[in-house]
Amino acid sequence: MSDPQCLICGNAAAAALAYPHPKSELFEGLEVCLCRSCGMGWVDRQLDPARLHAYYAEDYAQHAKRVQRPGPEAYFGAPEQMFKPQRSRAQLRLAQERLARPPRRLLDFGAGFGTTLYLARKEFWPETTLVAVEPDLSMKPYLEFIAAEIVENLDQVATASCDLIIASHVIEHYQSAEVEEVLQKLRACLAPDGLLVAEVPNSDFQAYPDIAGHSHEPHLLFFSQKAFAALFTAAGFSVPFVSTTGSQRRHGTLADLTGKVLRRLKGKSEYGNHRSAIRLAAHINAG
Figure 1 (cartoon, rainbow, N blue to C red):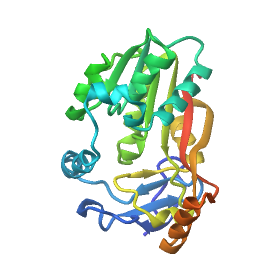
Figure 2 (cartoon, one colour; figure 1 turned 90 degrees about the vertical axis):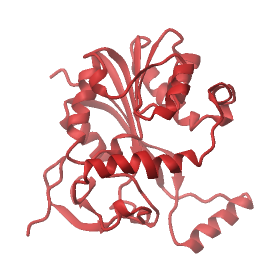
Figure 3 (tube, rainbow, N blue to C red; figure 1 turned 45 degrees about the horizontal axis):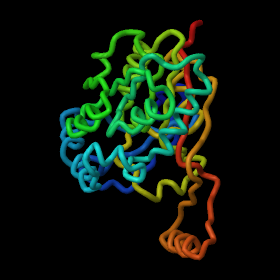
Figure 4 (cartoon, rainbow, N blue to C red; figure 1 turned 30 degrees about the horizontal axis):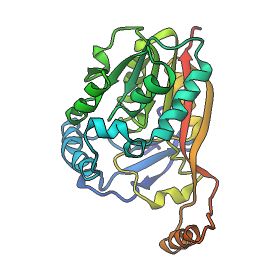
């Protein structure tokens, strides 16, 4: 039996890796195929969409609910309450540097609480129309509080209507058979001179094999920097910027990690050279 082919570059995958530390039954027994050429990773089978939907509605939602958040007014009124505002600001700064003018419409694909949208209007572009793609109904009060237009999926967004799209830590949740269609829908929503900023975890198992030492659930796609850029290029985007970003991490045994915590408590931080995320900016390829 031949090795599976990479969905990006078509090269044969290397030997599969057991799915790292699954926490739920749905992810048990899965393997991650790794491309020898570009570093792309994907699970070795397509999961039943109904079971995956149930997982997000139940297991994943229950995990999210364990993180207590205040109501919308308190959430947006206290920066320390917001979910990863530093990451949102960095994505918006990248967009500001590369857009010729303020975006008329900003679409956040997988908006969650709406942190990115809130900061975009408050700190960057006060006149921008905010659009949130967010199927989780528990997020609706937060998105309504910031006066965002709320849609459940990309099919409800008008063609070429968005000058800026943010897709932060959402692409990795799609199955390999779905991701091409998702990128084509994002491309259809983007204005001809618009910009898309996307970010995923830095899951380059070949460059950083130690990252298999912790759980990646519920991710179904795993990206190297090369693979992430190639995915968007294959979907008809030009990618003028791609870089690793986020905190530097060192993964290892429990003893290694315990030692690192103790060193941090003593004010002696230790970091490896693995940054936690990959961020890119992309335009529609006019050619």
